[in-house]
Amino acid sequence: MEKLSKLLSKLIIGGVILTIAILCFIVNGKNQAGLDAFEAISVVIGVTLIVIASLALFATIFLKKRVLTPESAGAASLLSVGIFFVCNKMIGGDILYYLVEYVPYELTVIGSVIIADAVVLIVRAAKAKTGGYELVIGEAVIGGITLLLGILALTVDGIKENKFLILGVILLIYSIFVILEGLFSFLTTKRTYVNVTMKNVDDSVIDAEVVEPKEEDAE
Image (cartoon, rainbow, N blue to C red; front, side, top):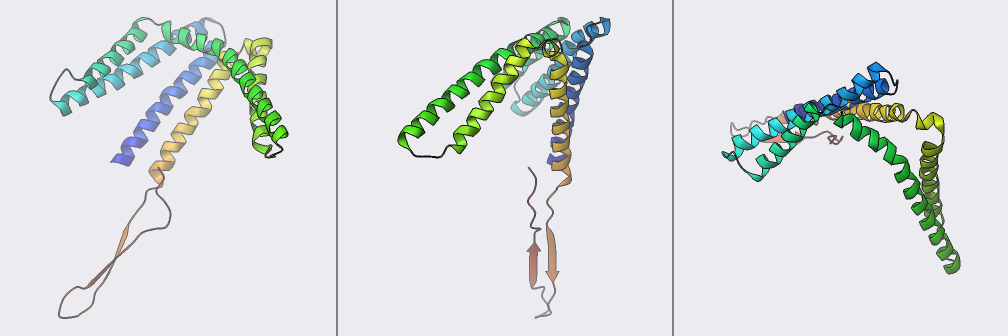
């Protein structure tokens, strides 16, 4: 039952993310359908929050035998956020819009900090003559890629104008990963086999041996 519940939760989360990814593709079209999809993003997020909060609220009331608890208060707050998203159909899309507008600045600054740190470490290692430049070079490469992505997203028109398309691709890949992770975890179930050896010694059953497969249970 626990395996099935984890599978269902992964499928639901993956389905919601996949839906938002598809809506991001439509929004990128910048037409009437894109405007409708922009509003639908808020509705999808709001309905998801309402369902999760409602289940958490009922579960808390059932388990605690109380209506007002810290857990139910948190679930109620989440429920109100979901209702707010559904009633204000632009808020979800606006959040995603400002998110994709903000991320390039984050990438640029973080990339610059990583590169600066790598330069400092290289200089210190060179003065100390301790070697071990491999990790520092790896850090510099990661910082360079991060900085490059941020600069491209800020300056290249083809990327600036298709940020929702890029976000949709990222969400699509992540949703597929979540769904496959849930399926893999469900299908790779650990089984325990019991081999019973019967021996006639004073008319009693004597030996029982538990044999477990070597492969680990996937988390």
